[in-house]
Length: 76
Image 1 (tube, rainbow, N blue to C red):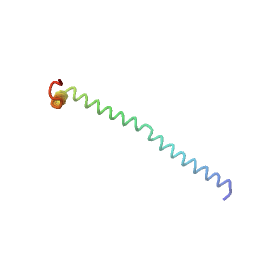
Image 2: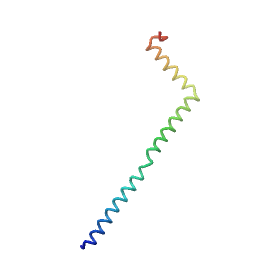
Image 3: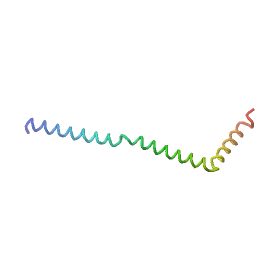
Image 4: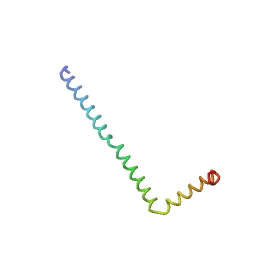
């Protein structure tokens, strides 16, 4: 194989590997933002459900009762 053919072959292989690596990196780039957006949507939905039902008040009352029980009453 001549030097010119070897050089062309090596350049083509390097270009192909570099292109594949760039494409893989580009495909993963926005994944973090989409995942964070999904988490935010779930949290907002949970908060919305808790605000529109009496379940939020029940949780608040239970937490307050346990804090009062641990602290021994009125906190004095």
